[in-house]
Length: 63
Image (cartoon, rainbow, N blue to C red; front, side, top):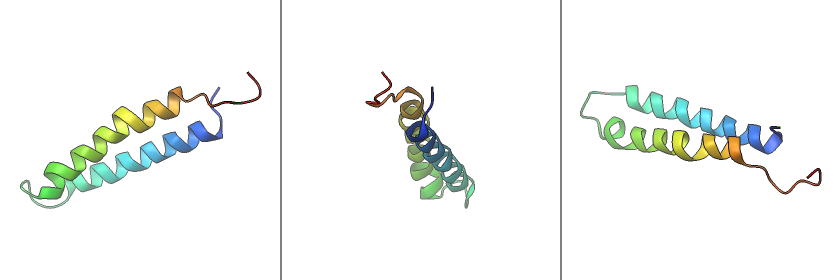
């Protein structure tokens, strides 16, 4: 079951997704932010933060 830490991590991941897509949409196509920063932010959100939020179990007392 997802607890508070899981939901916080998933929320951070969704926030990073929104920031990444905003960075991707800004400026012209040759903008360094949309070419390098946005894909890095989106990759971190999709590959690290959201799966960590789903899979994190913690060391709770209810185990």
